[in-house]
Length: 153
Image (cartoon, rainbow, N blue to C red):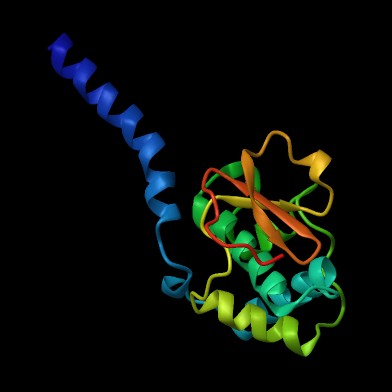
């Protein structure tokens, strides 16, 4: 009986660590979203990357959706939870640009400029704890566990 209990406890513990990782593999195109979601993401992209190229705006959208799909509590729950989580992103603007709106729609439909598990910063000195440098798109430097084969610099 002790052996069975230990086995069940181990299975539950492993599941607790695996489920968020499995959730991270859900493609953004598998997520359902509303026009309000598109608007919110577009307003955040405008706030974070209005002066960046389209690829940089799409990459910001990808990072937001990576956090939504991760299931990691620290990032918040759902699109609104991630966007409004303290110390994560700049507050969304009251408006969005056309390119930010197009990037939001593309990101929500699964288009990618960066892989999963990537973070970004405008200042490289803030990113020392987020893994190795993945690459740059515009003024944003992206970090993660994966390396990038080609550069958008």
